[in-house]
Amino acid sequence: MKIEVVHPKELGEAEVRRWRALQASTPTLANPFLSPEFTLAVGRFRPGARVAVLGDESGIAGFFPHERHTLGIGRPIGAGLTDCQGLVAPPGIELDVRALLRACRLSVWEFDHLLADQTAFAPYHAETRVEPVMDLSEGFTAYAEGARQRAPKTIKTVRYKERKLGREAGEVTYIFSERGTGELHRLMAWKSAQYRRTGRTDRFAESWIVALVEHLHATGTGVLSVLRAGGRPISAHLGLRSGTVMAGWFPAYDMEFSRYSPGMVGHLRMAEAAAGAGITQIAMGRGGREYKDWLKNGEFPIAEGRVARASAAAGLHWVKDAPVRRARSAVLAHPALYARADRVLKTYARLRRHTGDAA
Image (tube, rainbow, N blue to C red; front, side):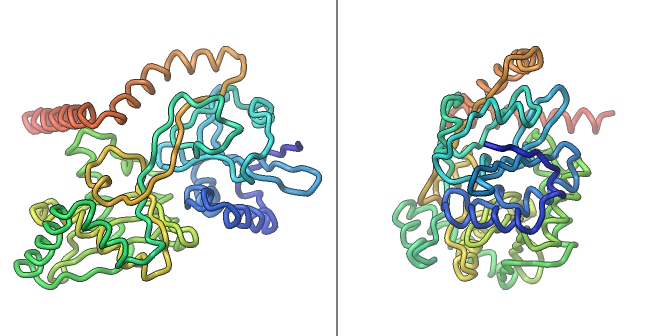
């Protein structure tokens, strides 16, 4: 197999059309994180972004979007922001993965949301788990009925809180695709506050992530949805859309209205509006949050692991990364551990804020 490695901006119209055709021909490849639009956008802001174009006697056989970092350490395109990773190629493509790494000048390629059905990488899975989805293929009415059957008390409570919000704060309205940049920046501010409040790393402290999000929203790949009460923004969500599939990405809400569960209200409104806009699936990202169990009615398998060639860089990477990956995976796989870790992070965040106030 011939392998040519290029920067995303070097892809021509024919390559992009072929990429989209491969996505359209295989349902598991339809996720927006695997779209050419996402890779092209990341390429604008990440100097290490690359695409391996795979060719055979019939022409272009597939694409391998990735990032190359120091010492040849490879990661998925947009690493740290993506909930779906892998080759964009026909199922069962025969591929020497180590030869692929050699062509890409990678000593290691690590992944944490790889499509588990990509057989070329199966020998390198450290573990597999499932990613929840909201399946809207039968329409919102069917989805909502299923949600009521799966979690009747929860859905009833969310609907009650939505009505209460309307009575106490004003008419509840929802816009599925908000084009104003002001609301986008409000969402990022809410999300930054949430990261700090819960002890997580603030992604929007990274200027390239802010620029990437702004670009995706401006080009229409990023869909910003806003829930309002009495005309005031209450919650928002930025997702990515590719065809009939949406990937959940950045949800956040105004903490002043937390008693109304605006995040859950917004998710149900989003499902209804998305179904009306022709979306048949919303991928919610790897688990760890109870609300995803309430909302999901489907799932698909993903894998975590690494491929390495024999090199000093690969050995150093394993020593540094393996213990962290095992600990993270253990926490994500067990709800009790996740809840405990979540409490520890929130306590740490409160202590950090108090220390800052005292200083």
